[in-house]
Amino acid sequence: MGEFLLVTIQVDMHDRLALTLQDDLTAQIVRHRTRGVLIDISTLEMVDSFIGRMLGTIASMAHLLDAETVVVGMQPSVAITLVELGLSLRGIRTALDVEKGMTTLQTALSEKEEIGHAGS
Amino acid sequence: MQVLDGASLEIRSSEDIVIVRQAVRKKSIALGLGLVDQTKFVTAASELARNTLDHGGGGTVQIESVQNALRRGIRLVFEDQGPGIPDIDLAMTEGYTSGSGMGLGLSGAKRLANEFEIWSQVGEGTRVSILRWK
Amino acid sequence: MNSDSSNVIDDVISTREREIMTQWLDLQAKSSRRSSAAQKQEAIRESNDFMAALKAVSQKEQIQDLSAPGWGPVKELLIGLSARRAKGGYTPGETASFVFSLKEPLFSALQAELGKNPEAVLKAIWQVTELIDKLGLLTMEAFQRSREELIARQQQELMELSTPVVRLWENILALPLIGTLDSARTQIVMQNLLEAIVQTRSDYAIIDITGVPVVDTLVAQHLLKTVAAARLMGADCLISGIRPQIAQTIIHLGVDLSEVTTKATLADAFAVALRRSGQALVQNGKNNGSTAS
Image (cartoon, rainbow over all chains, first blue to last red; front, side, top):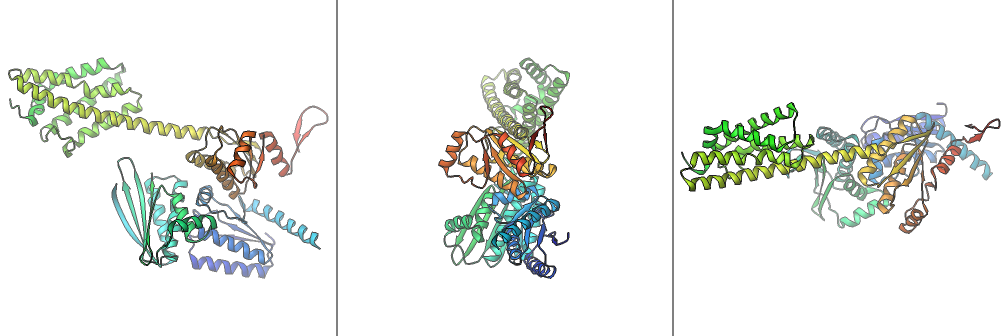
Protein backbone atom coordinates (compact mmCIF):
# COMPACT_ATOMS: atom_id res chain seq x y z
CA MET A 1 0.00 0.00 0.00
CA GLY A 2 2.90 2.30 0.73
CA GLU A 3 1.71 5.83 0.94
CA PHE A 4 -1.95 4.90 0.64
CA LEU A 5 -4.42 4.35 3.42
CA LEU A 6 -7.21 1.78 3.16
CA VAL A 7 -10.32 2.26 5.25
CA THR A 8 -13.00 -0.40 5.24
CA ILE A 9 -16.44 0.69 6.32
CA GLN A 10 -18.18 -2.40 7.50
CA VAL A 11 -20.77 -1.93 10.09
CA ASP A 12 -24.15 -0.28 9.89
CA MET A 13 -22.86 3.05 11.01
CA HIS A 14 -24.42 5.57 13.31
CA ASP A 15 -23.38 9.14 13.98
CA ARG A 16 -20.82 8.71 16.72
CA LEU A 17 -19.02 6.03 14.78
CA ALA A 18 -18.97 8.21 11.69
CA LEU A 19 -17.48 11.17 13.55
CA THR A 20 -14.91 8.90 15.17
CA LEU A 21 -13.96 7.60 11.75
CA GLN A 22 -13.45 11.11 10.44
CA ASP A 23 -11.28 12.06 13.38
CA ASP A 24 -9.19 8.89 13.20
CA LEU A 25 -8.72 9.24 9.49
CA THR A 26 -7.50 12.82 9.54
CA ALA A 27 -5.11 11.98 12.36
CA GLN A 28 -3.69 9.10 10.38
CA ILE A 29 -3.32 11.12 7.21
CA VAL A 30 -1.25 13.64 9.04
CA ARG A 31 0.75 11.12 11.02
CA HIS A 32 1.74 8.98 8.04
CA ARG A 33 1.83 11.80 5.51
CA THR A 34 -0.65 9.81 3.47
CA ARG A 35 -1.09 10.87 -0.13
CA GLY A 36 -4.09 8.74 -0.97
CA VAL A 37 -7.07 7.27 0.85
CA LEU A 38 -9.18 4.37 -0.33
CA ILE A 39 -12.56 3.99 1.33
CA ASP A 40 -13.88 0.49 0.81
CA ILE A 41 -17.67 0.35 1.00
CA SER A 42 -18.07 -3.07 -0.58
CA THR A 43 -19.91 -4.46 2.43
CA LEU A 44 -22.31 -1.53 2.72
CA GLU A 45 -25.77 -2.64 1.64
CA MET A 46 -27.10 0.84 1.80
CA VAL A 47 -25.78 4.37 1.41
CA ASP A 48 -28.13 7.19 2.37
CA SER A 49 -27.59 10.95 2.30
CA PHE A 50 -25.95 10.89 5.73
CA ILE A 51 -23.32 8.39 4.64
CA GLY A 52 -23.00 10.21 1.34
CA ARG A 53 -22.27 13.45 3.15
CA MET A 54 -19.78 11.69 5.38
CA LEU A 55 -17.90 10.39 2.35
CA GLY A 56 -17.90 13.89 0.89
CA THR A 57 -16.62 15.36 4.13
CA ILE A 58 -13.81 12.83 4.33
CA ALA A 59 -12.80 13.58 0.74
CA SER A 60 -12.78 17.32 1.41
CA MET A 61 -10.82 17.00 4.66
CA ALA A 62 -8.31 14.69 3.04
CA HIS A 63 -7.88 17.10 0.16
CA LEU A 64 -7.13 19.92 2.61
CA LEU A 65 -4.45 17.70 4.08
CA ASP A 66 -3.01 17.15 0.61
CA ALA A 67 -4.36 13.62 0.21
CA GLU A 68 -6.70 12.36 -2.48
CA THR A 69 -9.63 10.01 -1.91
CA VAL A 70 -11.37 7.29 -3.86
CA VAL A 71 -14.43 5.33 -2.80
CA VAL A 72 -14.30 1.72 -3.96
CA GLY A 73 -16.53 -1.32 -4.12
CA MET A 74 -19.97 0.22 -4.30
CA GLN A 75 -22.58 -2.51 -4.71
CA PRO A 76 -24.74 -2.27 -7.87
CA SER A 77 -28.00 -2.03 -5.93
CA VAL A 78 -26.54 0.80 -3.86
CA ALA A 79 -25.42 2.65 -6.99
CA ILE A 80 -28.84 2.31 -8.58
CA THR A 81 -30.50 3.54 -5.40
CA LEU A 82 -28.15 6.52 -5.01
CA VAL A 83 -28.90 7.61 -8.54
CA GLU A 84 -32.62 7.36 -7.91
CA LEU A 85 -32.24 9.16 -4.59
CA GLY A 86 -30.62 12.02 -6.46
CA LEU A 87 -27.43 11.97 -4.47
CA SER A 88 -24.78 13.01 -6.92
CA LEU A 89 -21.66 12.30 -4.86
CA ARG A 90 -20.13 15.12 -6.85
CA GLY A 91 -16.42 15.46 -6.61
CA ILE A 92 -15.96 12.04 -5.07
CA ARG A 93 -13.86 9.65 -7.08
CA THR A 94 -15.16 6.12 -7.36
CA ALA A 95 -13.60 2.90 -8.55
CA LEU A 96 -14.72 -0.69 -8.86
CA ASP A 97 -12.34 -2.21 -6.34
CA VAL A 98 -9.13 -1.60 -4.38
CA GLU A 99 -6.85 -2.44 -7.30
CA LYS A 100 -8.56 -0.05 -9.69
CA GLY A 101 -8.84 2.43 -6.87
CA MET A 102 -5.07 2.54 -6.46
CA THR A 103 -4.64 3.11 -10.21
CA THR A 104 -7.15 5.96 -9.99
CA LEU A 105 -5.27 7.49 -7.05
CA GLN A 106 -1.95 7.21 -8.80
CA THR A 107 -3.35 8.99 -11.84
CA ALA A 108 -4.89 11.68 -9.66
CA LEU A 109 -1.67 12.20 -7.75
CA SER A 110 0.50 12.46 -10.85
CA GLU A 111 -1.97 14.95 -12.35
CA LYS A 112 -1.67 16.96 -9.15
CA GLU A 113 2.08 16.95 -9.47
CA GLU A 114 1.92 18.12 -13.06
CA ILE A 115 -0.32 20.97 -12.11
CA GLY A 116 2.03 21.78 -9.26
CA HIS A 117 5.03 21.88 -11.58
CA ALA A 118 3.16 23.87 -14.17
CA GLY A 119 2.50 26.52 -11.56
CA SER A 120 6.11 26.89 -10.54
CA MET B 1 -56.54 -1.79 1.88
CA GLN B 2 -56.05 -4.14 4.77
CA VAL B 3 -53.41 -3.91 7.45
CA LEU B 4 -52.13 -7.40 8.18
CA ASP B 5 -49.74 -6.63 11.00
CA GLY B 6 -47.80 -3.75 12.48
CA ALA B 7 -45.07 -2.87 14.90
CA SER B 8 -43.88 0.43 16.28
CA LEU B 9 -40.29 1.51 16.79
CA GLU B 10 -38.92 4.50 18.66
CA ILE B 11 -36.60 6.92 16.90
CA ARG B 12 -34.75 8.73 19.67
CA SER B 13 -31.12 8.23 18.75
CA SER B 14 -28.97 7.44 15.78
CA GLU B 15 -28.66 3.85 16.94
CA ASP B 16 -32.42 3.67 16.53
CA ILE B 17 -32.06 4.63 12.86
CA VAL B 18 -29.89 1.57 12.38
CA ILE B 19 -32.53 -0.57 14.07
CA VAL B 20 -35.24 0.86 11.82
CA ARG B 21 -33.13 0.08 8.74
CA GLN B 22 -32.61 -3.48 9.84
CA ALA B 23 -36.29 -3.99 10.58
CA VAL B 24 -37.32 -2.62 7.18
CA ARG B 25 -34.70 -4.74 5.42
CA LYS B 26 -36.02 -7.83 7.15
CA LYS B 27 -39.59 -7.00 6.22
CA SER B 28 -38.64 -6.28 2.61
CA ILE B 29 -36.92 -9.62 2.30
CA ALA B 30 -39.95 -11.35 3.76
CA LEU B 31 -42.17 -9.62 1.22
CA GLY B 32 -40.02 -11.09 -1.51
CA LEU B 33 -38.63 -7.86 -2.93
CA GLY B 34 -35.56 -8.07 -5.15
CA LEU B 35 -32.27 -6.69 -3.86
CA VAL B 36 -32.50 -3.36 -5.67
CA ASP B 37 -36.07 -2.76 -4.53
CA GLN B 38 -35.15 -3.73 -0.97
CA THR B 39 -32.24 -1.31 -0.97
CA LYS B 40 -34.37 1.49 -2.35
CA PHE B 41 -37.01 1.07 0.35
CA VAL B 42 -34.51 0.69 3.19
CA THR B 43 -32.73 3.83 2.01
CA ALA B 44 -36.03 5.72 1.93
CA ALA B 45 -36.72 4.55 5.47
CA SER B 46 -33.28 5.67 6.57
CA GLU B 47 -33.81 9.14 5.12
CA LEU B 48 -37.17 9.58 6.80
CA ALA B 49 -35.95 8.20 10.11
CA ARG B 50 -33.09 10.66 10.05
CA ASN B 51 -35.49 13.51 9.32
CA THR B 52 -37.64 12.43 12.24
CA LEU B 53 -34.61 12.50 14.50
CA ASP B 54 -32.80 15.58 13.21
CA HIS B 55 -35.73 17.82 12.37
CA GLY B 56 -38.62 16.36 14.30
CA GLY B 57 -36.89 16.05 17.64
CA GLY B 58 -37.42 12.31 17.67
CA GLY B 59 -40.53 10.26 17.05
CA THR B 60 -41.78 6.86 16.03
CA VAL B 61 -42.21 4.70 12.97
CA GLN B 62 -45.05 2.26 12.44
CA ILE B 63 -44.07 -0.66 10.21
CA GLU B 64 -47.04 -2.45 8.66
CA SER B 65 -47.73 -5.29 6.24
CA VAL B 66 -50.61 -4.31 4.01
CA GLN B 67 -52.71 -5.94 1.35
CA ASN B 68 -55.27 -4.92 -1.22
CA ALA B 69 -57.24 -6.91 -3.78
CA LEU B 70 -54.25 -7.40 -6.03
CA ARG B 71 -51.07 -7.42 -4.00
CA ARG B 72 -49.19 -7.16 -0.74
CA GLY B 73 -46.93 -4.41 0.47
CA ILE B 74 -45.15 -2.66 3.32
CA ARG B 75 -46.16 0.70 4.73
CA LEU B 76 -44.03 2.87 7.00
CA VAL B 77 -45.52 5.79 8.91
CA PHE B 78 -43.03 8.20 10.50
CA GLU B 79 -44.45 10.53 13.07
CA ASP B 80 -43.04 13.30 15.26
CA GLN B 81 -44.33 16.13 17.40
CA GLY B 82 -41.68 18.50 16.14
CA PRO B 83 -41.84 22.02 14.73
CA GLY B 84 -43.56 20.98 11.51
CA ILE B 85 -42.76 22.08 7.96
CA PRO B 86 -44.10 25.49 6.92
CA ASP B 87 -43.95 24.92 3.17
CA ILE B 88 -43.75 21.29 2.18
CA ASP B 89 -43.57 21.84 -1.57
CA LEU B 90 -40.78 24.33 -1.15
CA ALA B 91 -38.87 22.00 1.16
CA MET B 92 -39.11 19.17 -1.31
CA THR B 93 -38.04 21.22 -4.32
CA GLU B 94 -35.16 22.86 -2.47
CA GLY B 95 -34.01 19.54 -1.13
CA TYR B 96 -33.88 18.20 -4.61
CA THR B 97 -31.89 21.08 -5.95
CA SER B 98 -29.54 21.63 -3.04
CA GLY B 99 -29.01 17.96 -2.43
CA SER B 100 -28.89 18.21 1.30
CA GLY B 101 -30.98 18.26 4.41
CA MET B 102 -34.55 17.40 5.09
CA GLY B 103 -35.82 18.19 1.63
CA LEU B 104 -33.60 15.64 -0.04
CA GLY B 105 -34.81 13.03 2.39
CA LEU B 106 -38.43 13.79 1.60
CA SER B 107 -38.11 14.05 -2.15
CA GLY B 108 -35.74 11.10 -2.24
CA ALA B 109 -38.06 8.92 -0.20
CA LYS B 110 -40.89 9.84 -2.53
CA ARG B 111 -38.86 8.74 -5.53
CA LEU B 112 -37.80 5.52 -3.89
CA ALA B 113 -41.28 4.38 -2.86
CA ASN B 114 -44.46 3.54 -4.74
CA GLU B 115 -46.69 5.79 -2.64
CA PHE B 116 -45.86 8.81 -0.51
CA GLU B 117 -48.02 10.91 1.78
CA ILE B 118 -47.08 13.77 4.06
CA TRP B 119 -48.94 15.77 6.64
CA SER B 120 -47.36 18.56 8.58
CA GLN B 121 -48.55 21.39 10.77
CA VAL B 122 -46.29 24.11 12.16
CA GLY B 123 -46.09 23.78 15.92
CA GLU B 124 -47.72 20.36 15.93
CA GLY B 125 -45.62 17.86 14.07
CA THR B 126 -45.14 15.88 10.93
CA ARG B 127 -46.33 12.54 9.62
CA VAL B 128 -44.83 10.92 6.55
CA SER B 129 -45.95 7.61 5.12
CA ILE B 130 -44.36 5.59 2.34
CA LEU B 131 -45.58 2.39 0.77
CA ARG B 132 -43.88 -0.23 -1.34
CA TRP B 133 -45.92 -2.82 -3.22
CA LYS B 134 -44.54 -6.16 -4.25
CA MET C 1 -89.99 -32.23 -2.85
CA ASN C 2 -89.37 -28.97 -1.16
CA SER C 3 -89.28 -26.17 -3.69
CA ASP C 4 -88.01 -23.63 -1.18
CA SER C 5 -85.32 -21.62 -2.94
CA SER C 6 -82.40 -22.37 -0.68
CA ASN C 7 -82.83 -26.09 -0.95
CA VAL C 8 -83.80 -26.60 -4.53
CA ILE C 9 -80.25 -27.01 -5.76
CA ASP C 10 -79.27 -29.09 -2.80
CA ASP C 11 -82.22 -31.42 -3.36
CA VAL C 12 -81.73 -31.87 -7.06
CA ILE C 13 -78.00 -32.50 -6.70
CA SER C 14 -78.54 -35.03 -3.93
CA THR C 15 -81.14 -37.01 -5.81
CA ARG C 16 -79.82 -36.76 -9.34
CA GLU C 17 -76.10 -36.20 -8.96
CA ARG C 18 -75.07 -39.10 -11.16
CA GLU C 19 -77.05 -38.06 -14.20
CA ILE C 20 -76.13 -34.39 -13.78
CA MET C 21 -72.43 -35.27 -13.64
CA THR C 22 -72.64 -37.56 -16.67
CA GLN C 23 -74.44 -34.95 -18.74
CA TRP C 24 -72.13 -32.18 -17.58
CA LEU C 25 -68.91 -34.04 -18.35
CA ASP C 26 -70.32 -34.98 -21.71
CA LEU C 27 -71.10 -31.34 -22.58
CA GLN C 28 -67.66 -30.21 -21.42
CA ALA C 29 -65.97 -32.78 -23.59
CA LYS C 30 -68.00 -31.67 -26.57
CA SER C 31 -67.14 -27.99 -26.15
CA SER C 32 -63.44 -28.59 -25.82
CA ARG C 33 -60.86 -29.77 -28.27
CA ARG C 34 -58.65 -30.98 -25.43
CA SER C 35 -58.06 -34.59 -26.08
CA SER C 36 -55.12 -35.70 -23.99
CA ALA C 37 -55.93 -38.30 -21.39
CA ALA C 38 -54.31 -36.18 -18.69
CA GLN C 39 -56.45 -33.17 -19.59
CA LYS C 40 -59.62 -35.27 -19.62
CA GLN C 41 -58.69 -36.71 -16.23
CA GLU C 42 -58.10 -33.24 -14.89
CA ALA C 43 -61.47 -32.02 -16.14
CA ILE C 44 -63.18 -34.97 -14.44
CA ARG C 45 -61.37 -34.33 -11.20
CA GLU C 46 -62.16 -30.62 -11.30
CA SER C 47 -65.81 -31.36 -11.98
CA ASN C 48 -66.06 -33.79 -9.09
CA ASP C 49 -64.39 -31.34 -6.75
CA PHE C 50 -66.68 -28.56 -7.89
CA MET C 51 -69.81 -30.65 -7.44
CA ALA C 52 -68.76 -31.69 -3.96
CA ALA C 53 -68.09 -28.08 -2.98
CA LEU C 54 -71.38 -26.97 -4.50
CA LYS C 55 -73.27 -29.62 -2.57
CA ALA C 56 -71.56 -28.57 0.66
CA VAL C 57 -72.49 -24.92 0.30
CA SER C 58 -76.01 -25.35 -1.01
CA GLN C 59 -76.87 -27.34 2.07
CA LYS C 60 -76.05 -24.34 4.20
CA GLU C 61 -76.30 -21.04 2.38
CA GLN C 62 -78.73 -18.99 0.44
CA ILE C 63 -77.62 -19.64 -3.07
CA GLN C 64 -78.28 -16.04 -4.00
CA ASP C 65 -75.62 -14.47 -1.86
CA LEU C 66 -72.18 -15.32 -3.24
CA SER C 67 -70.48 -13.11 -0.69
CA ALA C 68 -71.43 -15.46 2.14
CA PRO C 69 -68.35 -17.18 3.59
CA GLY C 70 -69.64 -20.64 2.75
CA TRP C 71 -69.04 -19.91 -0.91
CA GLY C 72 -65.31 -19.51 -0.26
CA PRO C 73 -64.27 -23.05 -1.27
CA VAL C 74 -66.31 -22.96 -4.47
CA LYS C 75 -64.87 -19.59 -5.48
CA GLU C 76 -61.33 -20.70 -4.71
CA LEU C 77 -61.83 -23.79 -6.79
CA LEU C 78 -62.94 -21.73 -9.76
CA ILE C 79 -60.11 -19.24 -9.33
CA GLY C 80 -57.61 -22.08 -9.22
CA LEU C 81 -59.14 -23.67 -12.27
CA SER C 82 -59.04 -20.39 -14.19
CA ALA C 83 -55.42 -19.81 -13.29
CA ARG C 84 -54.48 -23.32 -14.39
CA ARG C 85 -56.32 -22.96 -17.65
CA ALA C 86 -54.90 -19.50 -18.33
CA LYS C 87 -51.40 -20.87 -17.87
CA GLY C 88 -52.25 -23.95 -19.89
CA GLY C 89 -53.24 -21.88 -22.89
CA TYR C 90 -56.93 -22.71 -22.76
CA THR C 91 -59.21 -20.25 -24.53
CA PRO C 92 -61.58 -18.05 -22.51
CA GLY C 93 -64.43 -20.10 -23.96
CA GLU C 94 -62.98 -23.39 -22.84
CA THR C 95 -62.58 -22.02 -19.36
CA ALA C 96 -66.03 -20.45 -19.15
CA SER C 97 -67.76 -23.54 -20.50
CA PHE C 98 -66.74 -25.41 -17.37
CA VAL C 99 -69.30 -23.43 -15.44
CA PHE C 100 -71.86 -22.55 -18.09
CA SER C 101 -72.29 -26.07 -19.40
CA LEU C 102 -73.60 -27.04 -15.97
CA LYS C 103 -76.83 -25.15 -16.70
CA GLU C 104 -78.34 -27.65 -19.09
CA PRO C 105 -77.92 -30.73 -16.88
CA LEU C 106 -79.30 -28.82 -13.89
CA PHE C 107 -82.31 -27.65 -15.90
CA SER C 108 -83.02 -31.19 -17.09
CA ALA C 109 -82.77 -32.48 -13.55
CA LEU C 110 -85.04 -29.75 -12.20
CA GLN C 111 -87.56 -30.38 -14.95
CA ALA C 112 -87.56 -34.08 -14.10
CA GLU C 113 -87.94 -33.44 -10.37
CA LEU C 114 -90.43 -30.57 -10.38
CA GLY C 115 -92.16 -31.23 -13.69
CA LYS C 116 -95.62 -31.40 -12.16
CA ASN C 117 -95.27 -27.88 -10.80
CA PRO C 118 -94.44 -25.51 -13.69
CA GLU C 119 -94.27 -22.50 -11.41
CA ALA C 120 -91.72 -24.20 -9.20
CA VAL C 121 -89.72 -25.27 -12.23
CA LEU C 122 -89.58 -21.71 -13.56
CA LYS C 123 -88.54 -20.30 -10.21
CA ALA C 124 -85.85 -22.92 -9.75
CA ILE C 125 -84.50 -22.43 -13.27
CA TRP C 126 -84.31 -18.71 -12.67
CA GLN C 127 -82.29 -19.21 -9.49
CA VAL C 128 -79.95 -21.69 -11.11
CA THR C 129 -79.42 -19.31 -14.02
CA GLU C 130 -78.55 -16.48 -11.68
CA LEU C 131 -76.13 -18.61 -9.72
CA ILE C 132 -74.38 -20.14 -12.71
CA ASP C 133 -74.07 -16.75 -14.40
CA LYS C 134 -72.44 -15.24 -11.32
CA LEU C 135 -70.04 -18.15 -10.96
CA GLY C 136 -69.30 -17.97 -14.66
CA LEU C 137 -68.44 -14.29 -14.46
CA LEU C 138 -66.21 -14.92 -11.49
CA THR C 139 -64.39 -17.58 -13.49
CA MET C 140 -63.89 -15.25 -16.41
CA GLU C 141 -62.54 -12.46 -14.23
CA ALA C 142 -60.09 -14.80 -12.57
CA PHE C 143 -59.05 -16.10 -15.97
CA GLN C 144 -58.49 -12.54 -17.17
CA ARG C 145 -56.37 -11.66 -14.15
CA SER C 146 -54.23 -14.75 -14.56
CA ARG C 147 -53.69 -13.98 -18.20
CA GLU C 148 -52.67 -10.43 -17.39
CA GLU C 149 -50.20 -11.65 -14.78
CA LEU C 150 -48.77 -14.09 -17.28
CA ILE C 151 -48.36 -11.40 -19.89
CA ALA C 152 -46.73 -9.06 -17.40
CA ARG C 153 -44.26 -11.77 -16.46
CA GLN C 154 -43.48 -12.50 -20.06
CA GLN C 155 -42.94 -8.82 -20.75
CA GLN C 156 -40.50 -8.70 -17.88
CA GLU C 157 -38.58 -11.65 -19.23
CA LEU C 158 -38.57 -10.11 -22.67
CA MET C 159 -37.18 -6.89 -21.27
CA GLU C 160 -34.40 -8.74 -19.55
CA LEU C 161 -33.55 -10.67 -22.68
CA SER C 162 -33.59 -7.59 -24.87
CA THR C 163 -30.97 -5.73 -22.87
CA PRO C 164 -27.84 -7.75 -23.47
CA VAL C 165 -24.47 -6.38 -22.53
CA VAL C 166 -21.73 -7.08 -25.02
CA ARG C 167 -18.07 -7.29 -24.20
CA LEU C 168 -16.33 -5.39 -26.99
CA TRP C 169 -12.87 -5.58 -25.57
CA GLU C 170 -11.08 -6.62 -22.46
CA ASN C 171 -12.33 -3.65 -20.48
CA ILE C 172 -14.92 -2.14 -22.78
CA LEU C 173 -18.58 -3.01 -22.67
CA ALA C 174 -21.32 -2.09 -25.13
CA LEU C 175 -24.99 -1.84 -24.33
CA PRO C 176 -27.05 -1.65 -27.55
CA LEU C 177 -30.46 -0.41 -26.49
CA ILE C 178 -33.39 -1.34 -28.65
CA GLY C 179 -36.85 0.07 -28.23
CA THR C 180 -38.12 2.39 -25.61
CA LEU C 181 -36.62 3.16 -22.22
CA ASP C 182 -39.19 3.41 -19.45
CA SER C 183 -38.42 3.36 -15.75
CA ALA C 184 -39.02 -0.36 -15.32
CA ARG C 185 -36.73 -1.18 -18.23
CA THR C 186 -34.15 1.31 -17.06
CA GLN C 187 -33.79 -0.48 -13.76
CA ILE C 188 -33.19 -3.74 -15.58
CA VAL C 189 -30.74 -2.07 -17.94
CA MET C 190 -28.85 -0.60 -15.00
CA GLN C 191 -28.79 -3.91 -13.17
CA ASN C 192 -27.48 -5.77 -16.21
CA LEU C 193 -24.89 -3.14 -17.00
CA LEU C 194 -23.58 -2.78 -13.46
CA GLU C 195 -23.41 -6.51 -12.97
CA ALA C 196 -21.46 -6.82 -16.22
CA ILE C 197 -19.07 -4.08 -15.05
CA VAL C 198 -18.45 -6.02 -11.84
CA GLN C 199 -17.97 -9.35 -13.62
CA THR C 200 -15.73 -8.11 -16.42
CA ARG C 201 -14.04 -5.35 -14.41
CA SER C 202 -14.58 -3.05 -17.35
CA ASP C 203 -13.52 0.57 -17.27
CA TYR C 204 -15.69 1.73 -20.16
CA ALA C 205 -19.32 1.25 -21.12
CA ILE C 206 -20.76 2.43 -24.40
CA ILE C 207 -24.52 2.89 -24.44
CA ASP C 208 -25.67 2.79 -28.02
CA ILE C 209 -29.05 4.33 -28.67
CA THR C 210 -29.28 3.76 -32.41
CA GLY C 211 -32.23 1.49 -31.77
CA VAL C 212 -34.09 3.90 -29.53
CA PRO C 213 -36.64 5.61 -31.78
CA VAL C 214 -37.71 8.43 -29.48
CA VAL C 215 -35.59 10.39 -27.04
CA ASP C 216 -37.77 12.64 -24.90
CA THR C 217 -37.09 14.18 -21.50
CA LEU C 218 -37.86 10.96 -19.64
CA VAL C 219 -35.68 8.80 -21.86
CA ALA C 220 -32.88 11.33 -21.56
CA GLN C 221 -33.24 11.28 -17.76
CA HIS C 222 -33.11 7.51 -17.73
CA LEU C 223 -29.99 7.58 -19.88
CA LEU C 224 -28.31 10.07 -17.57
CA LYS C 225 -29.23 7.93 -14.56
CA THR C 226 -27.66 4.91 -16.19
CA VAL C 227 -24.49 6.87 -16.94
CA ALA C 228 -24.37 8.13 -13.34
CA ALA C 229 -24.82 4.62 -11.95
CA ALA C 230 -22.03 3.23 -14.12
CA ARG C 231 -19.76 6.06 -12.96
CA LEU C 232 -20.39 5.16 -9.34
CA MET C 233 -19.06 1.73 -10.21
CA GLY C 234 -15.93 3.36 -11.54
CA ALA C 235 -16.74 2.93 -15.21
CA ASP C 236 -16.62 5.71 -17.75
CA CYS C 237 -19.74 5.92 -19.90
CA LEU C 238 -20.06 7.00 -23.49
CA ILE C 239 -23.25 7.36 -25.50
CA SER C 240 -23.24 6.50 -29.18
CA GLY C 241 -25.88 6.43 -31.87
CA ILE C 242 -26.75 10.10 -31.57
CA ARG C 243 -28.62 10.85 -34.76
CA PRO C 244 -29.04 14.44 -35.99
CA GLN C 245 -32.72 14.55 -34.96
CA ILE C 246 -31.88 13.25 -31.51
CA ALA C 247 -29.10 15.81 -31.16
CA GLN C 248 -31.64 18.52 -31.93
CA THR C 249 -34.18 17.13 -29.48
CA ILE C 250 -31.60 16.95 -26.72
CA ILE C 251 -30.57 20.58 -27.21
CA HIS C 252 -34.21 21.69 -27.32
CA LEU C 253 -35.01 19.79 -24.15
CA GLY C 254 -32.11 21.46 -22.42
CA VAL C 255 -30.70 18.13 -21.29
CA ASP C 256 -27.17 18.54 -20.04
CA LEU C 257 -24.96 15.98 -21.67
CA SER C 258 -21.84 18.09 -21.32
CA GLU C 259 -20.20 15.64 -18.97
CA VAL C 260 -20.82 12.63 -21.16
CA THR C 261 -18.85 11.84 -24.25
CA THR C 262 -21.22 11.31 -27.13
CA LYS C 263 -20.50 9.94 -30.56
CA ALA C 264 -22.53 9.33 -33.68
CA THR C 265 -21.50 5.72 -34.08
CA LEU C 266 -20.56 2.81 -31.88
CA ALA C 267 -17.33 2.47 -33.82
CA ASP C 268 -16.29 6.02 -33.00
CA ALA C 269 -17.12 5.50 -29.35
CA PHE C 270 -15.14 2.29 -29.33
CA ALA C 271 -12.11 4.07 -30.76
CA VAL C 272 -12.36 6.73 -28.05
CA ALA C 273 -12.62 4.14 -25.31
CA LEU C 274 -9.63 2.26 -26.68
CA ARG C 275 -7.59 5.43 -26.80
CA ARG C 276 -8.52 6.37 -23.26
CA SER C 277 -7.50 2.98 -22.01
CA GLY C 278 -4.12 3.47 -23.61
CA GLN C 279 -4.74 1.15 -26.50
CA ALA C 280 -5.23 1.53 -30.24
CA LEU C 281 -6.03 -0.62 -33.23
CA VAL C 282 -2.97 -0.82 -35.43
CA GLN C 283 -2.77 -2.06 -38.94
CA ASN C 284 -0.22 -4.79 -39.22
CA GLY C 285 2.37 -3.90 -41.84
CA LYS C 286 2.89 -7.39 -43.29
CA ASN C 287 -0.70 -8.32 -44.06
CA ASN C 288 -4.14 -6.77 -43.93
CA GLY C 289 -4.89 -7.92 -40.42
CA SER C 290 -5.29 -5.57 -37.51
CA THR C 291 -4.18 -6.11 -34.02
CA ALA C 292 -4.66 -4.10 -30.90
CA SER C 293 -1.56 -2.93 -29.20
